[in-house]
Image 1 (cartoon, helix red, strand yellow):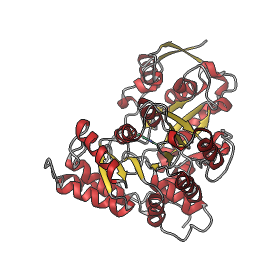
Image 2 (cartoon, protein in one colour):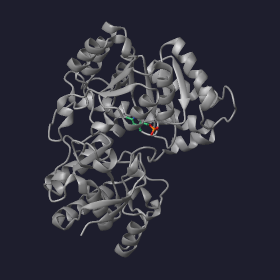
Image 3 (tube, protein in one colour):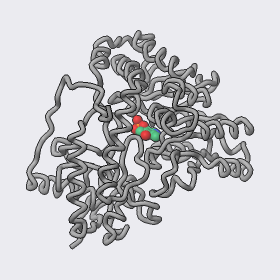
Image 4 (cartoon, rainbow, N blue to C red):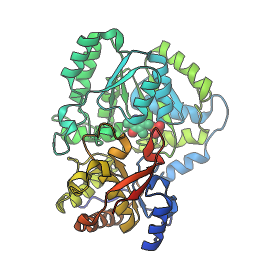
Length: 451
Ligand SMILES: *Cc1c(COP(=O)(O)O)cnc(C)c1O
């Protein structure tokens, strides 16, 4: 069979609200044209993020009822612990409330002012936590990863020559660890090859520096390896996932992505001494080592989610459905970041609206038009998000796909609405900011449309 179907049926439904154009216009104005300020009930299809927005399975909801809420040594903690040990083989496993808590603890333990932490591309919370520790966050993705049109199969790879040069230039004393983000979220959800992970490992071994994964989408990355990397197609995703983890000294994970849960995170470490210090910090600010700021039921949901995400029929559907949206947009002549990422499709807003310059926020204009047209919420990733002094390389609109939430007809609707807006793209207006905080302005700024 050629048709790829959702590998689940629907047991519980959550109605979504159809709205009139007048209702959406009023909501937009009330929100100052900032989609983060909308009430979610005014959104029909919400593609703002894939983080914590997925649907849990009936097995996960059953597991929730088995949650053991004991303060210490809860049965649910051991279910969580044993699942992660089985998947990753990494000995020290701490639960955290989400990815950034794992990051804060890791960098506080490992970094000091003046240090440099290389990554393919730091995710924004990762960068912020590296810099909070006084260290500098450096992006060393391969050149292809910076160009929307390049169709390199592993655009998330790290540039190994640049990594070597960094060690030569600053010395290993200044590099407390090397990180690699799989898949590369800030770089368009692009995968990293096994060959590249092995090469980073080899560089770290030569210099005696620990190597950590930001492994939020470890299963999606493994699926891409199985599909695209020579010699990998006959291996199971489970084996590939295990090799990814075998190659590192530890990992931070936001379980809101491939953990298939709405809240939760993990910090994995091999070294006993660092695990000891991380545990102390966890107890200080998050909670005891057997719950890490979560309820026992959350640990149960993670234990089950980390198992389900490795099912290959799920991954096939997941990556295929992102590519399905990308293909519809591409076929209509809309420029996107190629190839489609794992968790999102990124529309090139400067190509969509060449008449709107970067300082009039073309990404914001497209995102606003999609909401106005069809009640769809996407996310600007461009000058609004990254600030004005040096405009980013690309003005993008991200369509992040929540896991197991929307059906093919929802996605058809999203494509159709985008194509409608594209047909009248000359009518889209630039925007200006009327009110903005000094940092992370994209969350709360207000806008007005230019005439
Ligand atoms: C989401 C994400 C994080 C942060 O996780 P939170 O759960 O949002 O705190 C870190 N790195 C990457 C690559 C992510 O996608």
